Length: 492
Image 1: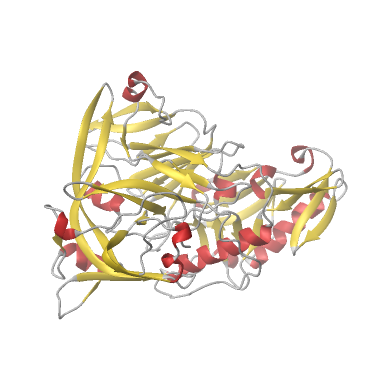
Image 2 (image 1 turned 120 degrees about the horizontal axis):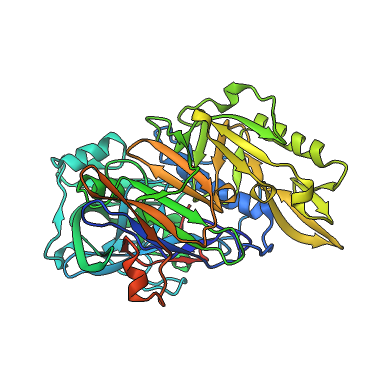
């Protein structure tokens, strides 16, 4: 779940979530509720927030790892998450659900839920789904093929006595939820080039939660549920693409300036100079094959086994992580290379165990460019602002700290929002690849649209806001689900 801090990451999402009949993409406007340039949080607080996030990521894998031994303090109120408004059932009922790239399933609180908050400190209404009140709802049985597919990846379970397809999810912070699956209509509005098609629906399978435990019971940061954005068959992306409602691709571009924001598209953003690297097959998350790291044009001397991929090793792209994390050996080599490059120009200091620097000049004049080099020749170029985070000044000097951390004892690299901002990222699940390119995320983007078999059209899509004119909306290809970003923590 996306987390961010007042200084850089809370990109809350106004998300227009989207699908279009016939395989058209959808666009989402992203907004940041916490300014990127604020420096009010200690890195230790951000590390603790990410630690819980990573515990959840690995908890959802078959290995069952609960958390990582990262020290630090934790502030549950200065964080961010993505959520969107969905309409489910007949008549349609609105739900605010958090978008989560680290899980697959869409679930919302069910009527008679035990432990579900009745109100939210986020100032949003909370609703509960009642299958008996929807004329189009039906329970999902154990014999349903969708349930069988979910069992294979631990997204569903079955009880022989009730024949009801159900689920239980445990998260790395100790919270959890359980319930049963329902099939019902998802409502959305589609906007196509030149005209508005109005309301549309698609039948999807989603969870109806009957029990919340741990932090999920906390009303201060409560939403109605979780919108899983993963690759498996029960994710909404997979379900809609199998019905040819949306492509099996999504993209985002996150602004890195003080205002934040950006755009999220259910479809492919097309831009020249995009580079792609393959997704590692048969992995539970968005794993890519990191081969080496360079600083100042020099490849660092790191044993290649550090980057090997397995269920809990390798590199993961995760927009729900604020900072970025390297395996121990890679982290030490990276820090040493940066220190050697800047030793004559800055005063290095340690702040709460973090490598920081006192600076009186622009970081672009002092710090070297770095790159993460992936399979297929794709390099993720890191400018100083992509690996440094500004903290409160000391005297007349600015304080910048390395935004990369290490997960002790783990050969795991997690690339979060710090390195993803100011770039287009495309998750092409059909071709099993992830691509990126530097981009001004305040600009409109070009989206690939399959208008008919064998033909592709490029449509200009821009962030949508309340002041958009009808003509502007006609240029946008999207299914709109207004998504909002907020400062508050649901769960990690």
